[in-house]
Structures are given as C-alpha cells and as structure tokens.
Image: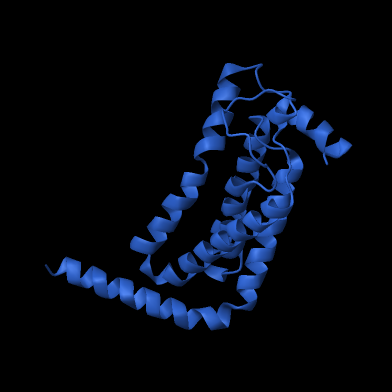
Amino acid sequence: MITDPDFTLFHIINGLAGRNYILDTTMVFAAKYIIYIFVIYLAYLWFVRSNYRQEVLFAGYASLLGLGINFIITLFYFHPRPFMIPTGMVLIAHAPETSFPSDHTTLMFAMSLMFLTFGELRSKGVILFILSFIGGLTRVYAGLHFPMDIAGSLFVALVSTGLLFALKQYLIPVNRILIAYFENIADKLHNR
C-alpha cells in the first residue's frame, strides 16, 4: 500500500516534471543511462586495472544477488507504478509491472556499496553511491517509481552487500579460479 508520505514525496519530486524541457531531458537521460557509468567502470577495472578483478566480481555478485532478492519480493508483493494508479507525470514509457524495489537502482546501490567495502576503491564507491542516489531520484522524477521503491532498493542492496561481505573469505578462492580461467583464455586469444 502506498503510504501518505511516500505519495506526497513522489508528488514533490515528480511535480517538477513537465515544467522545463532542459531539466526533463537531463533527468530522462540520467534515468535511462546513468547505470551505464557503472557498467563502463566495471569494464574499465576488469580490462584496464586488472588488479581489481576480485572487486569487480564482488560488485557483480552483489548486483545479481540484489536482483535475485528483488525477484523474490515481486513473487509475494505487487506494488503498482505511479502511472498504474494513475498519478503523476510519466516521462519514460514502461511496462505496467511491479515497481518495488527498483531493479535499476538496486544494481547501482549494490555495486556502489560493495566498492565501499574495499579500501582502495572506497572513494570511487562514494561517487558511485551518489550516482545511485541521483539515478533513483531521476526515476521518481520520470514517474517510474515512488520514493519507497528507491528506499527498498537501498535496503536490498545493503542486504546483498552484507551477505557477500560475510561470505567474502569463501568466495575469494572461487574468484581466483574465475580470474585465472579468464586470463588463460585471454592469453590464448592474444597469442593467436
């Protein structure tokens, strides 16, 4: 059920939509494409800064686990998107499906929180966390989610990151095998 504060906060944020073309275009662009900054950063770390492959794998695990938790939630709980009620202004077309929690935002929060657990990447994790928050906000602005959907994504990301952090020592040997396997394939392709 939509709480009154959630509904009110949605209208404060989404109420800005449709008033300024430049702001709308910027927010829609961010809502759709900010997630690609995360993908590009992971690819950069994997292929260019290869000493961070362990961290990339953990960020990937956190994201996948977060999406898995989201999927389980959607099996038991359906939360309509704002345009399904209908309320607010929609700037991005989307399928009429459950909105809680946001998969986009869960992916971003999970990656950023996982990077926060690694000392050398903590400053990048802070930047990615801020981008995650902005990404979630833009999805509310665009009329795709309620604020509680974004808060739920943060909670799911915290759970997935916490679980992986607790299992870290067990996953490092698996990561070493995966990294060695990748490096072996890359060497064979390079030497052709």
